[in-house]
Image 1 (cartoon, one colour):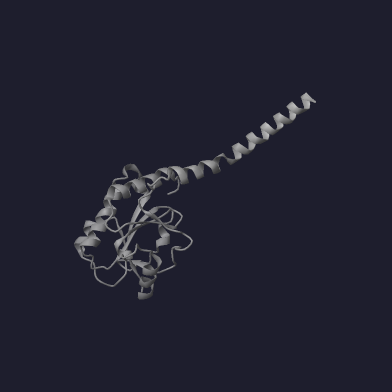
Image 2: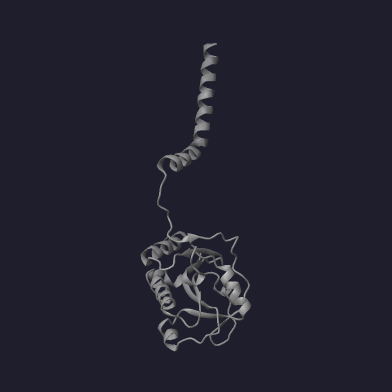
Length: 201
């Protein structure tokens, strides 16, 4: 009898241990969420639901009229901005920020492309083209395509898509939006972590 009781006790102990091991991740997550309540996010940019914002099939061209679509950059990380060809100060600041953010990635910078998607027919200043050489400057092929861009890219409350820099992953998914007038160091850290974590692109 005593031997049987010992076996049952060991069996219950083993079962309890197995249940505890299985429940440990759930317990840890509840403890972290309800007790520790971390306030800091790991990312500075806003993650975008890729299913709600797939990259649209829209026509765009290079400045000299050759067809070139966003899908052609698949396999690379893409920093994307949009706006008028008049390119006022805010637009130039974005172009400058994208250039510097790419350079800050050092040996990883070749994994990143910069795209400016122009949503009107305004002519570009030659000085802007020269200053930001290396940025792919694409023009929406029609008013309908320009309208598609504006509805496709989600913006923060009180802003428009023209005020943000977006990030497209190497699989061609829109994945992140950075705030208007972003802090460059924080954007750099987001991109750095993504490049480090991903073997793609």
